[in-house]
Image (cartoon, rainbow, N blue to C red):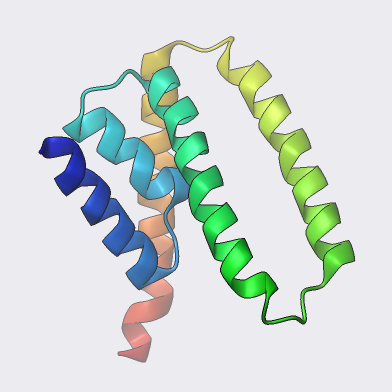
Length: 119
């Protein structure tokens, strides 16, 4: 039951805000479901793969995709993921959790600063 509620909330946030990925899935997996950070990250990547594949299949039929841009972005993202994984293997899980929380906080404050004046 907890998994279903958590996954539905993650899907709702992802669909509503158009974001998600690790910023929504990892906190849900660690805080709500109690997974360790490395397991949560791996699980998050699989969830992102499924969500991305579904979105891609839905939009690919509409045409107009910039294939060279997609290929170069995917290649660079894969390289960044590989490098990040190597770096993460050298850090303590607590340091990863703190860094992740700090990044999410900085992004939230940045988005608030740019969005609130437009309200």
